Image (cartoon, rainbow, N blue to C red; front, side, top):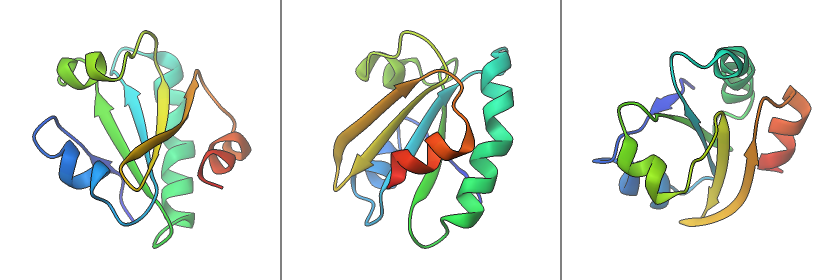
Length: 103
């Protein structure tokens, strides 16, 4: 499954109303660690197809969402289950740690 790019307009539908757990990566083009995390997230998205959703929020384009969730540094990953924020991690994480967020 492809990674979903989420905006303020569709955050409610794509993330909060999702039937599956959703990992949301808050990132920006200029962020080196964010770019290093991208291929890891693509692998996890492919492996978790049907079990979880991987979403990305560009903080430069979606400042309201970044502010809403208190994103102070990137990459920050938030995990939502049943519309509730259940996990948060900041910084580049290895694949195993990303998978553990969804466990």
